[in-house]
Image 1: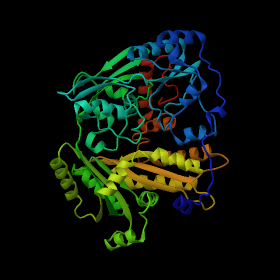
Image 2 (image 1 turned 90 degrees about the horizontal axis):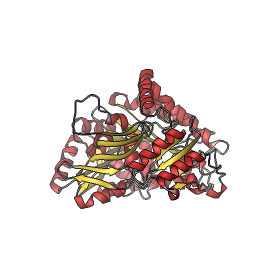
Image 3 (image 1 turned 30 degrees about the vertical axis):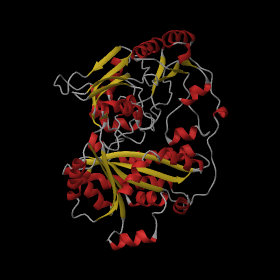
Image 4 (image 1 turned 180 degrees about the horizontal axis):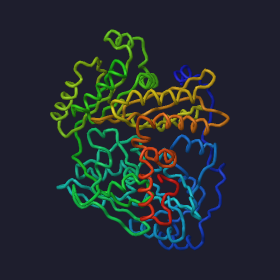
Length: 516
């Protein structure tokens, strides 16, 4: 906190989470005929009207969601929580809600940071949270084809545990790994930290089972097909607006037994980004390839303790590093020789780049702490800090323009009376043609209007993104990015999505207010 106070002018204060008992939870508006019909499907014990249960599914994990749970603004609370037992019950629930005009918000781990699980009613009489926690089975494994079929409510760590006896892995490890579900990954086109090695989640999907008001839809019969457009990719990323994903069939791989993570320092952002581009275009990226800019490097090393020392600074200067940028590289494979060979290929491509190796301890420390971001955010919010992230992606030729534009937009919006926000950035995912930029923002929180403070900053950042890149690389559209979708896909693209919505969900009960 001392480093943050020095950088931002933060004044120490305490703003703890408000107890749930302080929130006025409205009476359920679920109509009695719908209540009776849904109870007949899932059973009385699996239709929850208790205020605490409904409050627990009121929103996701964005900064604005967390502010609302601390007493700022209003919470959109579902009228009921449903806990179906299996895909057949989900199908019946979806058809029942469509018949009675009740909105459905599919709910997995609740980790959306863009309003994707906000309980909006739209034009519906009521809205329910459809919690898939009971859809928690590994349905089948085909070790010959390397396929595994899971129910959609399986959380990521449990999926890996279920695959252990088969010595297989999914390899999808986003920061939300500890809580998020496989169905949520599919619905939002998730991208994991090791996507350079394992691919994005949509690359892993071989089949999908979807519950829609028009009936059940199953997709995926072969590894490749020329039978028209790939409709699996229409479902993936649809965010629960076209149907509720109940099962996914995934490509799996042998579980790695050897892992090597290392830290390096590169001299300057431009040199670091060029180095990552070289790795991507030579096809020798490490499974995890993450480059932090100077601000994020300073923040990470200072907050981790023991790094911001005169000895380290002297050492880096002696090695010719004037503007340190932390580069994390991680390789995973089934044999030591394979990791050794892949590491050698990566490091050969970095010859000519001024780097300093910090060793395996730095890489392993990053790997051990890579899921700690949400907990750190909670601690910072307790101290009165505005702290949030956003991401985008663009082609290599526009990468610096995009980074500069977003940094300037966020800084200008959040700088107040000499209090300068911290705007840090890293390359989170790299491709031959471009990369994703992930921004972390830390600023003193407004006492008068904390929700308005971040909403204005996010709007400024989104406007800055528009000329150069996508509005979202892996966080999805939800509510927050919906106003910007039309500019990215065009009016005709919006019409196409609406036509699909009309075909699958003519009463518009599926996840109201999201995507389209």
